[in-house]
Image 1 (tube, rainbow, N blue to C red):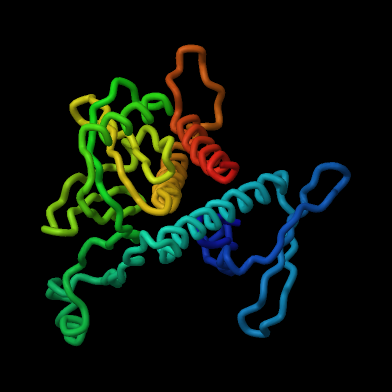
Image 2: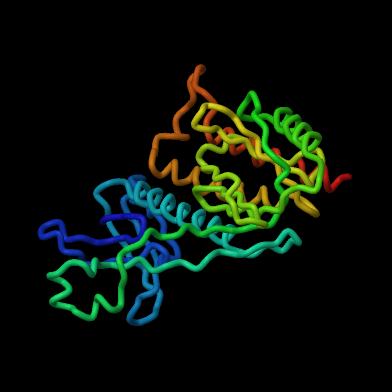
Length: 300
């Protein structure tokens, strides 16, 4: 049995022939049986592609079946997280701050039409496909107002963020610049809507803090720059900056999940006494900040 991110495969151990391939998303339920306390039986239920009936596949394992069940659970959890975050990034806004939804995606070509050997065999390929191009990330674009930026001393903290918001608002009285904020899983791009010039492009992986100010119409996030400085970008949006913060929050979650996938040991072990604050701790502070701010706003 071979489990990867997309399918569960049954492979003949003698000649390595794939006997059956079951897409993960078609598995409805799975579980572990009991065999004198050893739990060596594993089963899953999926709909058969030919008969369209739900079939139960049962296996007797050489190793504890719970390991297979836990691996399958982790894969499904990752798929569900990615789907929910992608939908959150792609769905249109319901608030007045509005903006464009997710952009159309190109289909990645599966071959290189410049290869002479394949072109001679299949001359029709050259007319139907172009040279492979990078896939564009899904993004969500919102119309807000950009108040300005300010260098801060620390990478996180609501006191730092509120002070930065107050100072930037005081130094830059309205009217503020109308901008579009394009939030993708890897970048947050700020573009002036009047002249189309890009004001800033921020990598999500270097975003250290996000929060809403004393006034819910103001929010800011702090970026760690290549010059080892911390820059706070401040925004204004009516009736609330909650939608902008929630979208950036979704991008942070997706980036954090990809970080965990690339480094499986991160976030699972205990932290030492001298270990710096992790991304997960920063994300928890971000989510708590947004939730607390919205709750206080509702009470007032």
